[in-house]
Length: 122
Image 1: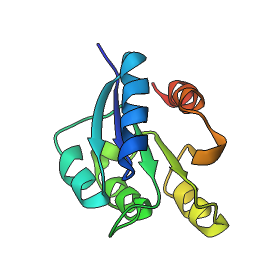
Image 2 (image 1 turned 30 degrees about the vertical axis):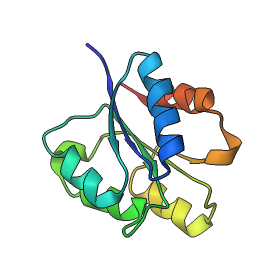
Image 3 (image 1 turned 180 degrees about the horizontal axis):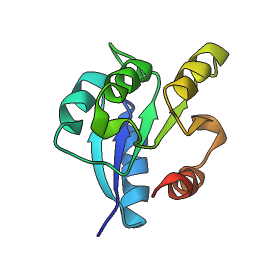
Image 4 (image 1 turned 60 degrees about the vertical axis):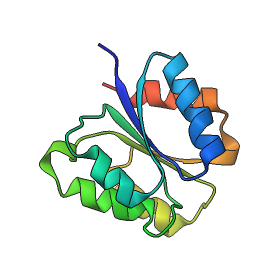
């Protein structure tokens, strides 16, 4: 059975690039482009891992992470936070909410992000 990755990324070009990379690696991919859409789409799904952009329009990735951690079914879901925003307070909030990693997008190729996903997936 395919593992499912939920990618929340508002930059369309990056979202498509990550989606293609993950599908080529055999993952089923669910996509959302902002926190509100992601909160709606995650209901009734059981992603094996979430790749979460922190800088999203309207509500941040931290907001999304806070909301899903309130739900029992997502308390243990691995989350990799990623952003080009490297702020120590934001990084700390992500880790405090259970993020497994916090990546600076410009420092990682899609292949390296895929390698991180494989590392944290059950």
